[in-house]
Image (cartoon, rainbow, N blue to C red; front, side):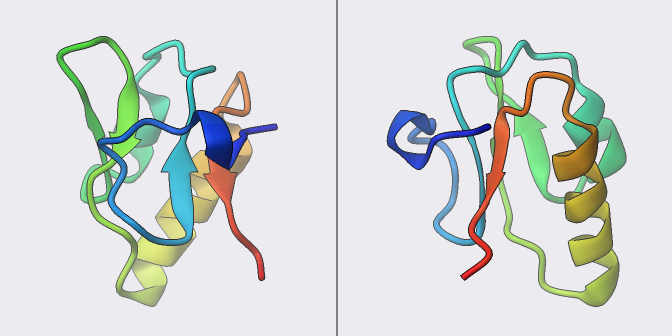
Length: 76
């Protein structure tokens, strides 16, 4: 489970984030290419929080598909 305290500083503020468990598999950026990006340091991060129902759906899919649970989501 992702931990906000270990999230990357490149994440834009908002509901979704990527933490230090990321293995740079590229699944999230393939699933939600408008919202996740890959850094030069070898990890993904949230480049843009979802703004539409379609983007929310793709981000939710990336969240549930991450093989190491490095994507976090605040559900409050």
